[in-house]
Image (tube, rainbow, N blue to C red):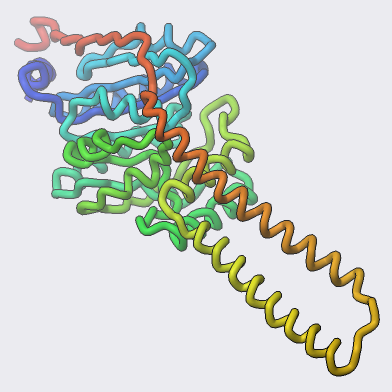
Length: 334
């Protein structure tokens, strides 16, 4: 089948694949990403669309994206009114997607677009979710790799939903999974957990994650810690139960220790002593109380935010460019 026939077939058919690219201040890498992404989608015979979601960038990223076009895919630019965060930007991309299969990919080129045909092949086999698991995380420090592994173990031990370890936002979702996610009403979103929560048939594909193409990551350790807290509090109430358990054990221990002190005083008398041990016990109990109050405050804060029912994001503009049909010269077709 020649290029003209493939392109005409795409124009006449429904959209099969949507690729969502959330970004924030990525003007240095977006042209390279678009070139590799369109080159990959040109190999796919079905109709495709690329959805770029601008999360309130303050550089010229949006202007670059609005000039992007493709010979085989629709290019849609969704601009949010301000920086709402990556989780909200991905949610916006899911709502504006129309494909039967949807792939999310970061703009920093750490996730290779060339793997998209393999992901689509697994979807054609009947899988609703194709998780892309990082076999090697090039360009990341030892501390970040170890802390990420510890976080996934902690999260899966606390949460009821099983969240695959070392699987980021790079994955494929079928249309029915996307529809279920779009119906979820919560405002506090930990997308890695939300992607795993619907279940359905899943396949995990391993790949080597490349180092960042250029620039610096927007995720420092403080933001990663906040994301980890969001993940735990979004999918588990076990921290509250652990706080209750620790409080009960301390209260029980204090009761028995008090009985021992009273008995010793009645039988043998007691000198006034033990100031250091008393202070250590008070500080330990005070620390546990403050930690428990902090955990409780996290959940109350989430209830407060959810009760407002504010939208996840506000869209400033949506621009779309259709695929550009390419015609071969007459002498080549002869």
